[in-house]
Length: 204
Length: 204
Image 1 (cartoon, helix red, strand yellow):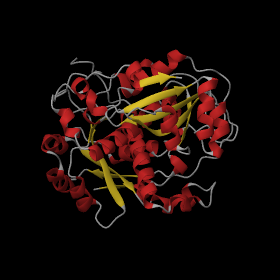
Image 2: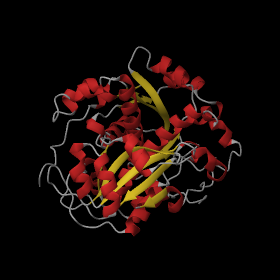
Image 3: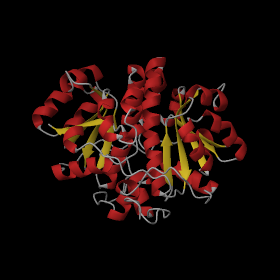
Image 4: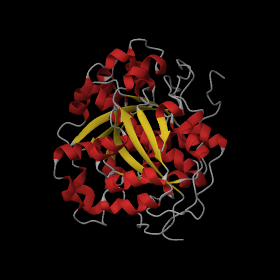
């Protein structure tokens, strides 16, 4: 086989796997005290990093908050409704984007030596960083579920405060925050409705 | 069990499944002529829709381009380097976001009857739409791989042209475009480097 491509790719995963990733998975609002070992966080990154991004820019950055000291810095910056579960989860992950991601393109996108120069404009760079770090956020959440973890993503926090407290003096800006661990059924909402295919999609 | 939660969620998927989703999967640049049935497109949406989004807003919209007539409208709007493979792929998907997604919140987020009013500000609404539709783009790409399909996501197209041609008079704006089908190894790049854990992540 050429490179590392799989010889057969046209088989759906099992129903159990699809349930673990999508149909049976739920955003968790309460967490068991079961720890998440560092080796599992590294494995999670090593899956996430392979998801496709524009010019392989992979602009997402991942700050794993695990120590009581770091959690005490994060908690006051969370929206009131998110604070208790954020403190309870064994790991909080601040996913951000490096708006100077293009500095890495000579290494990350060797096919096109001039790719860095395509991102000279800051507004365009910010849009590319935001889109692709958010895409990578989606890969991260599903990679966590693929590894048997539960997730609880949140947008309710003081973004300027998180920037200053955790990314001050860097070119990284916070995008969203994820609680990570092994969830319980406590405070689990009933599954909310979804738009039908006809409401959200069309075939031309 | 409460609701539809799975009783056991702490088991990683098999190595084969992780390869199909992440480690062995590759962005495809050439496509076999094997068709993608409409039932599979609907199944793909029915997995994607369950991925978590802020206030369950699910702002992404999916326009599946399958007919020769629709492909002929899209092709001139693609960047030169993307045109041939876009015409070759059996399906092109324009993923966009509805910037008026908040109109659906009374149905989609019944826990908080006032949620629609949280998005009165257009700039905030656009940011939420872009972040969460991009997240859903990540779910879509991995759901396609979970169903045995290959993907080729692209940002290189005339966004204003796609807006006018396919979303004129609507509140949907294009985000990125995906080639979908069963890929071949033709024009497959060698796997590009990724940032190490130490370059992209930190544990506090």
